[in-house]
Each structure stands twice: as C-alpha cells, then as structure tokens.
Length: 263
Image 1: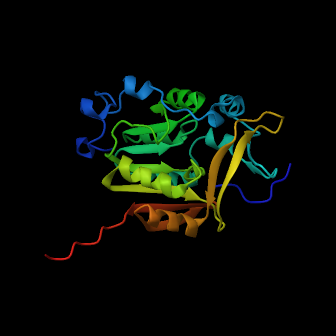
Image 2: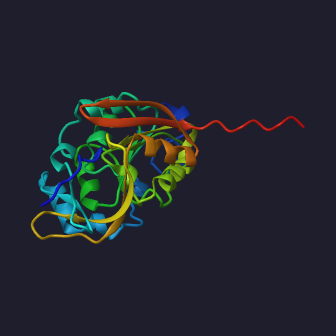
Image 3: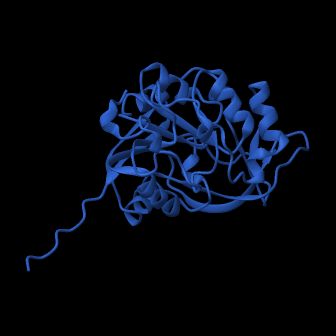
C-alpha cells in the first residue's frame, strides 16, 4: 500500500420556496416529507454502488480507498463519515441557511444534524446503503445523481460539497455549473477542498484493501486556489475561506452579473 499525499477534505420558512407545495416534489406536512419523489431512483453510477463501498458503510468502518491507475491510494475516512459531526463539520452546519442539499451525503451525518436543527434538508447519494443509513438516522435522502432531475430544483438555499465531493464527475467546473441550476439566485455553496494546492482529474476505483474493487470512474482533487478558479468559471465567487482541524472550506456565492450598459 502506498499513500503519498494528505487525505482529501474527504430552518427555512415557506419563503425558501422548497418543500411546501406539491410542486417541490418533496411532500407536504413537515416540508420535506417522505413522499415517492424522495424514494425514487435515477442514474446510479456503478462505481459507488459496488460492494466495497456499500459494505464499508454497512459496517461503519474501513479500510476503504480510492485507487488511482498507478497504484496510489487515498484513504477514505469511513469511520468519521459514520460518526457524529466533528468540530469541522459543525463549522459547516453553522453556515447553512434555509433549505439544504447535501450532494454525496454518504451515511447522512450532516443531513440528520441539519434536520435536528430544523432545516429542510435532503441528501443525495448514488449508494442505496448510504441512503438507507441516512434514513435510519432520521434524515431524508434520495438515491440519485446531482445531474439527474431533482426536487426543488432552482430553489435550494445551500448546497454542500463536503468530504471531497467537489470531485464528483471529475470536473469541478461542470459540477458547480450544475449547482447554479439547482440552487436559488441568492444561494451559497459550501465546498471542502484539499489543504494543499493541487488540481487533478484522474480515473480511480474503490478499493477495500483486501482485493475488492469497484468499477473505474472519474474523480477530481483540488486545493483552495484551484477550487476558486473553477468556481469563477462556473459563475461563483469566493465569499470566505476557513479551516478547522486541517480541513479547508470555501463558501461560494453567485458572482454578480455585469450591469447592462444604458441604452
């Protein structure tokens, strides 16, 4: 096993426009109910639905890695994902406002914590085990890709890309452009990145360290400056940056559009 680099960064009222009327697709009653839209499935990339990933979430522990083609391994912090939110997570939760979409929610610690704080919150993950674990914690989750049609599209107030999920799809700018479509006009994105400066897209697969592998897929890893560049290209501006316990986060807001010249 070779590990050469640090780990990846591995309540709204009705005014939010998400989660009340039937048009949101999220049920009624509590605002983020358990209607059929929340339980449906769409695109499920095979890589994150393979046994090594689901098995680790089911057990609540690793070992689990992302393996690059050259044999480099990135440890995945399954135990932290399955634990209560830590101080770094709490710093993220404190910045969330309104209705929150957690992209790549994993076993659901942030979704459950947000729901306990009174936020309408929905987790997205392509792993059925991740969705099931989120629901067992009392959160609401959908087994779907962020690139699929989503409930409340265009009305989410906060989007989260935590635990390295800025890497989804291997193209951070494309992912962030998608979030411009998913979120409202005054929304924020809170994204975690590496503490070191890197800007990499590569092919990886899930590896359990015992000979079990998932299918290959594209993944990206970025540091603060690279994330800032990708965000600007996608129409986001960096509002602030902070770090807790070695983990680095950026808060992004929609970049103001230039004013049209007077006619």
